[in-house]
Amino acid sequence: MMIKFFSQPWPWYISGPAIAGIMGILIFSGKTFGFSANLSNICSMIGLGKRVTYFNFDWKRQQWNLWFLTGSVIGGYIAVHFFSSPDPLTLSTATVADLQKLNIPFDGKLEPSAVFNWDYLFTGKGMFLFLGGGFLIGFGTRYAGGCTSGHAITGLSNLQLPSLFAVIGFFVGGLFTTYLLFPIIFK
Amino acid sequence: MKAIKYILTGILFGIIMTKSEAVSWYRIQEMFRFQSIFMYGMIGTAVITGSILVALIKKYRLKDFRGRTIQFDSKDRHWKKYAIGGSIFGMGWALTGACPGPVFVLLGQGYMVMIPVIGGALAGTFAYGLFRDRLPQ
Image (cartoon, rainbow over all chains, first blue to last red; front, side, top):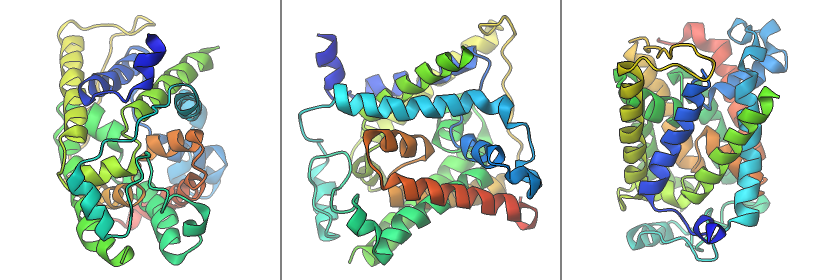
């Protein structure tokens, strides 16, 4: 029964409050839910603080967040190996049609196998998508001082206007990529 | 031993991110194309639940597990960095279909193409640290 519930994809009205629950656990542990801070923590941990003052802080005080990161990797492993759903993803038919036009067939998995593979990675487009995309994530989240967890969940829950600016920014960048870059990249 | 608590919370987060399908590149495309309520409903219910929780904590001056009154930091009001930084991150989010948390959850799921994403993200973080004094804040 439990396994069966866990194995189904969860409806969004269950997942949303569950994410808020993670924020709650961290708040009651005296911490702040903000995943992208870990990117700075790793830079500090590997000694970059000697070269760049921005990373010159005591990363050990943020060690809890690196343990949280470690757990999230394990959680991803557990979820696909023990609670994986047998049914294909139910994606909007409009999205399926739009992606088809970009030569990305919908395969019912979480990630498109046409893109998420090593052969694609080693093309110019793949490099831009994964390496370039990663760079923009790292640069942008540090510039904005947070990502989806820090701004969209934690910041908005605390009614922070700056977080609303950040979230609007997330969409400006995302819409630009989706409507202007994707037709160039995938055609 | 404190590590265990955060690892377990992280495991829970990884499972929720996977089962919610928030880690899906397809779902992020569906969101940026406004073709389903799915991601909006999820983020919306997370924020509604979260803001009720935060309001209750403030109203009743609740304490954390170690007995200290919970405080919330206010973010500074330099809107430029939020708007510009947020837009840059948004581009990366749409490209990879993953925000920083899901990048690591997907690595755990066995998507090894997340390794270059993590490499890129660390390079981007380093570049920000290097140039931050020269950026509009």
